[in-house]
Structure formats: structure tokens, C-alpha cells
Length: 272
Image (cartoon, rainbow, N blue to C red; front, top):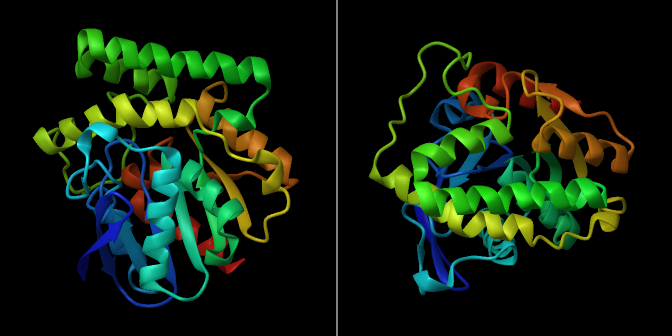
């Protein structure tokens, strides 16, 4: 099932596959509803899997493209989407920027979530002040690099910042190809120009996470380098909540590089 949802200032495209408890997947980067096709296939046998295009990406259009989108906009979109598809607490897999959105939802709309798997959230507020400032500067430098030299050069630096090796990246066999076409390029443009700013200016009430009734599971990729921003955020989230950070197959993009093993890990944690 495919649908369009009118939200505040945008039309949000979404897809639903399978049957069972609702599991919303919130992607990062330029990832739209199609980006996790392989993961969805492995989960739809026992879950109603909901994927969507974040506002500004692919089929989710903005009423005023010049306005862009704030973190609050993205959180409200997910809040409205979940309200439209279920009246019961849902599970959520948030990946990177999607995990940052999920943490807001766990604080601001906790009744909508039962479990949030927060895989390497890009949430500077989880870090100590000096480390936070350094990583915000990294994001600003990447935006500047993109504006001055384009996607090819920026992509290399973004991958290094997140601990991704796009050349030697291990993957499961038989993955659905996702070529860097015009739609993905446009998605990267919006993500870097707009959502990097949303991350840098994020005002998540980190202290309130300790009081959320949502079961938050911090997660990290097995091959993600231990010094990078996204891994550090997952570790600090686990420390804040007093829980164990859980290892997942692959690295920062394990949901797309290792969908079969990643789906098995999701099932294991949701059943615990």
C-alpha cells in the first residue's frame, strides 16, 4: 500500500508492506521509502513495515521549497504518520538522522512508541560540550565543501566522518541496486544543505530521555570505527540511559548492506 499524507507544509509519501505489529523505518541521508527495500522484504512476514520519504526528498514535496525543513518539522511528520497508520504504540528503527528524529519522538510523543532502535544517532547534544562543538564544525565544514566542490568530493569526506568505506564495504549478496541517479543526487543536495543544519541546531532535551517510557535501544555497527561521531553518540546514549549498546551487522549503513542479518537482529531485540 502506498499513500500520501498532508502535514504542516508538506505532502509526505509513505509505503506499508506486510502484516503484524507496526514497525516504522526512518532512514538517513538521501534514503527514501525505497532505500530499505531489501530490509523490508525480510521483515514484512511478521510486521507491518512503514517506510517514507522525509520531507524534501523524492516524492515528499514542500509547499514552500525555499523554507526547507527543521528537526521539529521532521518529528511532526513522523508523529502524524504514525497517527495515520496505527492507534497503538509502534516499533521504530531510526538510522542516523532517522534515529535523531526517533529520540525526539520518544521525548515529545512517547505514547506512540513501544521500542525505538536508535542506530548510530547523529545527535550532537549527547556528547560533551567540547566534543559536540568539534562535530558541529565538521558538519559545517562538510556543507561548505559541498557548496564549493560538489557532491563527489563531499561524499568522500562524509563517508570518512561517519566511518564508511564505500570502496571496500562488505555486503550481503544479491542486494537491490540503487544507482546514484538524479533523484538520489537531489536528495543528497537537500540533506546536506538543509538537514545538516537541522542536526547542528538540534535542541533535543537530552535529560528528558532518561524519563521516557519508551524502550530505547542504542545500536552501532560492528565495523563502525570506534572514534567517529555516530558511534560516540550511540555509546553516550547508552550511558545516559544506563543500558547496553547493541551491536548490529555491518557498519553505519548496515540496514542496507546486510539486510538479512540486520532483520534477524531487529527481531531478536524486539522479542526480548
